[in-house]
Length: 104
Image (cartoon, rainbow, N blue to C red; front, top):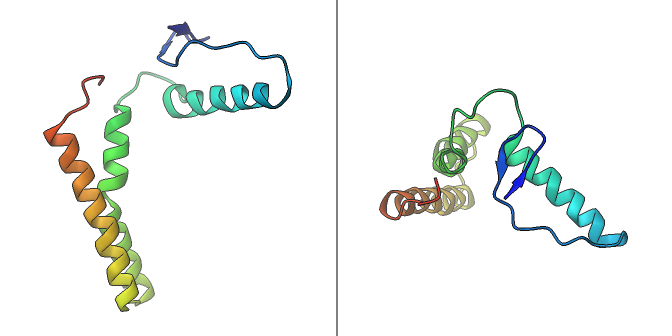
């Protein structure tokens, strides 16, 4: 495991040193994404990363329905969009309840 500057552990795989160029830029982007998703912000973590994902996917039903009401758009296409995304969110959340992530 790689220790970060703020002494939190990162579970990213071991790094392979690359000599400049395109792949070094990809490594920098990967480091930034790791920081932004897992270590950004002050203080202790108050919510697990998988709970954040579940909240996002589970709230799609309410967000899309709210947008449909706000824009007064109840066309067939919007109902299909709502059905597809809310079914995906419900199935995602059900998967997490049935098969919880052992890493968290």
